[in-house]
Image (cartoon, rainbow, N blue to C red):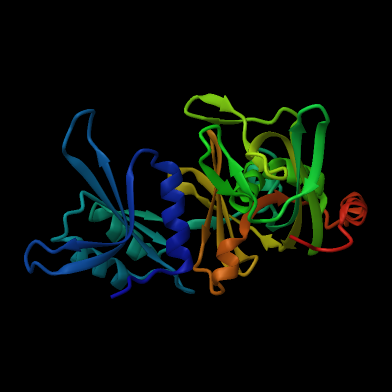
Length: 351
């Protein structure tokens, strides 16, 4: 049976993942009741070893209540009864809307830790991380190669370039080979940062289709087996035996489909454990995403949790999909990015 989680439980889980480095975190964990032998679901279970080389784990159960009203004493009573015979050493109760006074007193009396998020504003200058993230602007970039040119070293003629078919065989020195298309996709994957700079991704603030040209070379080599190696293409001239020509460089033209969304962040504070955080939920491309940022004395951390992709098909699996988050204070258009795309976009799309 699928385990149940909600937004607040996911946020609480990610916060504790940020705080408990090296600990094992399990969401919707199933723990066995010592009396009945039946399993009970706990929102989050955190396991930490008590010392180096120790086989003993401290097990902390974390229960989250996402309610419009404050958690009452009956919820705390239910948690006390639930964990009485579960293998948890400590229980943390996190109530999104807080606790009634009676519920808080009971939790403390039972040795549990009641935690209430507090709403923050952006006026505190000490919260540098959260203040800079009132909104995040996730951007998805899908790259599709549409043309590749290969430059080869021809004896007596220098470097000659030709437009290569997708099924061109690319050889290693031992004459083993792969087709060009997988190699092109690997080159695109390895040069994503350069592609982002070319299209000025940081300053693109709306959905656009762009083009990127990635060039490797001259004297291009690839590293495998701890050494640099050249790659080759085969040339046949009339009735002569085929010869291998060294690839000096490759130029790839790819279409980049860029989609931009805004996710507003909601700042909160867990005063009981002295942690500030913010969370936001929205679409990144066509996928639901939850973003959680925490800020403590030792700095800030950011996590992105994606939901299932509803539109996975063969075409999407073939393409390279990459995501990058850039925080934006102003929603501005990128003239540089548009001008670059117009200049470098190919007149026709051929493979």
